[in-house]
Length: 147
Image (cartoon, rainbow, N blue to C red):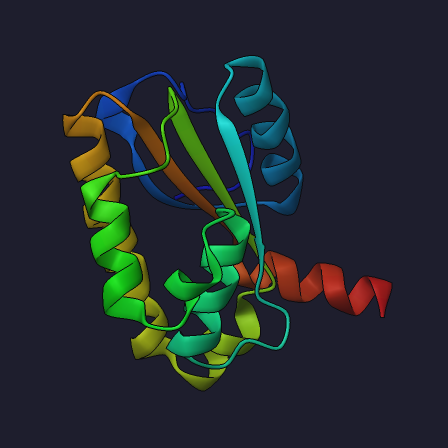
């Protein structure tokens, strides 16, 4: 998906899913989500290189009990059942995913596919669920500029 001039209607349930956007777009989306009374969840993947660390970081970002971060399948089942996260909508903002993607692109793609499925399930229940990640090339350029 294009990262420049990105706009999405967060109330459009048919648009729920996983998107790659610019870092600036992530900041804008966080503001928009707050205005729409959605829960905004920040997940920082700095140093993440596997599914286990991702599960812990996602569980933490969603403010779930610690036990959900120990096992990816348990976390996925929890997310798909929608139990315990009542809201009009959830926006998951993931940053620093490029290190993991470079080490395990297939694993990262599997996770994103699962999150895409989760978004569809939530949308079917009338709850918006979006996941936004910075476009890998843009995030790498931004890190180099600040490094």
